Image (cartoon, rainbow, N blue to C red; front, top):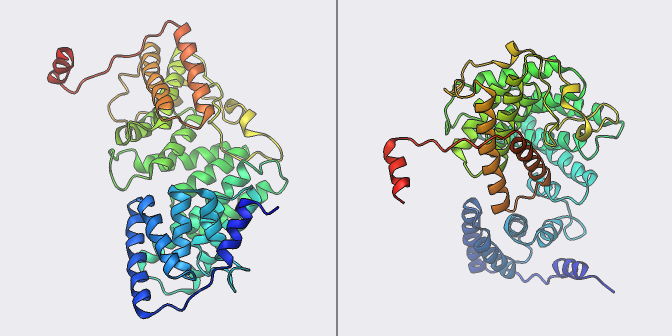
Length: 403
């Protein structure tokens, strides 16, 4: 019996292609242009309808089929999306795609890490070749460098997680990060990937130098500053600052995230976690080692050390109180976070908000949910009460009291 998925694939590959007339070509061109606009607006539902019309009018239109695959992956049926993208390859076509885009999308939806690495590797090589041989405008070059870095960093992350126990993991990560640095040495994602690799290799001082170098460059910037790294990059930076016990710089960065996106679950989690660690550090007159978070390590192990079971404190040097109070560039809350009681109270408020957002958004990361529950239980046992919401001015507070 032929499976439903296989039947769909056959239907894609055995379409009778009528010869399009001039009016059909013009219609298809207009529809594809409209689809591009809709995809840019994340209006996937309407884009899918339009692109299905393109394929109906011109079944062999490869651009339309690729866009339909992308639209389905982003906002429709992932299996159907992959099917459309795979139809761009032999035996459905004489030659494989000559652009990197289908490879990147197939890598992101790959069924296993080795498949993903294959697609990412091809895409990265194609982009790197374009950078060497093509006559690109400055804008095009910047875009190409960004895409190459995305592919290389994605491969590093696969070796650091799914394939972390393979003997070649460390060697491959070193090779990939060297390529990424040669393409875009100042890219924040590249620098944080380098720091993660160095941490996994027990080269802690090098890792901290990289992390603090990035922090120093952006610590004076305010929320919504377009020159700030993207939110996912700042979340990664926050996690790595916490790995080095740099609680106040971590709070400094996570504040920009919270102000820009108050509904970000991981932002609320990291804010609460950083405040909790700050409170623990202030509670002790000796160097404080933070407990292990399930999200605290994203680095590759050195030949079989699982980062998910490795204690943070075992990978970083002990720090004293003088190392904790890194306040340069902080945005005015260092006085609020000056006592353990204040830190724990603020932490509880952030973690309670995180738990609420987690449930409302049906967030998929179970590790965050479990750790937040654990922290809240610990704070409750300490008798901690959540900090009260602060208001911008007296009028706001009065308005709430009247409701």
